[in-house]
Amino acid sequence: MRTRHTVLSAVATIYRTEETRTMARIDVPDGESKEASRVWQLVPHMAGAIGAMSEAVYEKSSLPIREREVARMRIAQLNKCDV
Image 1 (cartoon, one colour):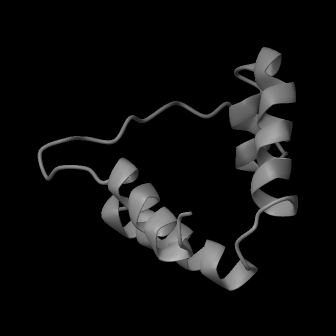
Image 2 (cartoon, one colour; image 1 turned 180 degrees about the horizontal axis):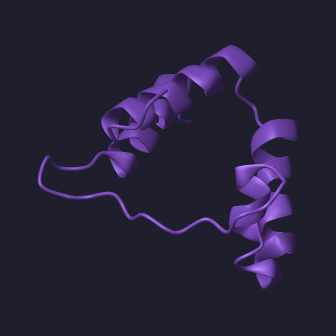
């Protein structure tokens, strides 16, 4: 059975990037709604899958909130994203 540390390490490894790789960038449509909503408007056929993933991560996770958020922060740091 995997420990939380093992799972977090595996997740961080999956998202690790090299110095020479660049992040993909997309043009976000203009609008009044939140940026995330406008991004998902680009692929409306994925709404069901996106909703299911969000529910799994935020409502059905076995990780406590604090551990999940620290994992997200570490992944963002490895990907050189602003936290």
